[in-house]
Structures are given as C-alpha cells and as structure tokens.
Amino acid sequence: MEHINSVFEIFSPNQNTHLVILKINNDTKTENNLLALADFSDKMPNSDKKDYEILHHQTKKQEFLAGRFALSKALKFLGYDYKGIKKDTNGKPYLIDYEENNNENIHISLTHSYPFVGALVSRLGACGVDIEQLKEKILRVAPRVFSEKELIFLEKDLQKNTVFWCAKEVLYKIYGKGEVNFKENLFVFPYENGKNLKVSAEIKMPNFYQEYILEVIFLEDFVLCYGIEKSGIRNGELEIEPKY
Image (cartoon, rainbow, N blue to C red):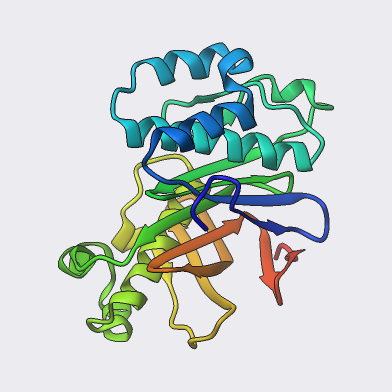
C-alpha cells in the first residue's frame, strides 16, 4: 500500500453512510496523483483553493488534497457532488450548497494523521471519525482526559488508551458544539479485544444525553474510530437505534 490509489472503503449496507480511508506518501508524485484523481487542478472549489494556497508544508498540502478527495469520493457514493466545505463557529465542517441536494441534511467528518486521511459522510445524523497513531504521549495526558473509572480499565495499555482517545474525539465531533470537557462529559466503556472492535460510549451534557456504539479499526500502528448519531453498529452494519 504505497500509493494514493490504495483506498480502503467501508460501505454502509443501508446506502446512507460511506467512509473512505486513504494512505498517502510524502512525495511530489503522490500530490500530482491526487491532483489528477480529484481534478483539483481545474475544478477545486474556490473555498478549497483559498485554503490550499496558504499551505506551504508538503505534508499539510497532501493531507488537504487527500481529505478533499476522500470526501468527494464518499459523497459520490451517495449520489452527491462535492462543492466545497466551510466550518461553523465551533469548527465543525459542513458542505457548501448541501441544501441543493434534495434538501437533505448531509453530515460529514474529516480526520488525518499522516499518512492516513479519512472522510465520513452520512444521511443518518451527525457523524464523527478520528484516526490516531499509537504514541506514548497519550499516557501522559490520560489523567486529564479520562475519568477514574476509565483509568482503572486502561491502566498503562497504549492501545486501549488510544482507542479511548479516538472514541472521545469522535464523540466531540458528533456533538459539534464546543464547550465539552473530555473527562466530565464524554465517556467510553470497557470492551473486549477483538478484530472487529466495537465500543459503547456516551455524551453527557447539561441539556443533552446520547448513547453510542462506535466502531474501531486498526491500521498498522494507527487506531481509527467512527460513529453516527442516533445509530448503532452491529456486526459491521449500521442500524437505526430506537429513541427512548
């Protein structure tokens, strides 16, 4: 998996959600390949062009292009054209002109941790995706972001800590309103190890509460987690959860 045409795709069987994960390399050939695949050289939306032109670091430019390409590919799977994205006051991305797509509320989430980028698109509800590399620094910040109960389960296990961190990032992106304390408002529950890992989690805010089942994927020494609001993931399938 050495080139941008190495694409991991995870499809929702209900045709309402699509996740695209790409792996890129830090070389000019990869960037040129991205430009060709996404046709950004001629058709990149003006909002993206402005953001892209202010980037100078090669890796950042690649991540930007790969992320937009992944998003356009995910949207195309659902039958929509990519016209660019903007961010609200809380930094949550949303599609430009999504209201032209049959007035549907299309939710998106982006993530990157070199050399991986990911884009998640869903019609089911607010969504979140996050990817993190296994790094010792998470163990140093763990007491600041995990509750006492969570720390008992996590101990000093690097993979478990990274899974919980990814899951909380996903919850934060799903909520999308800022002013969230990772330790006091976002909670992840113990899980059993397995190839197809799913974790239970919840958001507890003064005026908001929601439970989630998040899916976790291991890519080399990276952890990827994703989830959708008011939906659960069972046996690799996205299913609407009943609202109580």
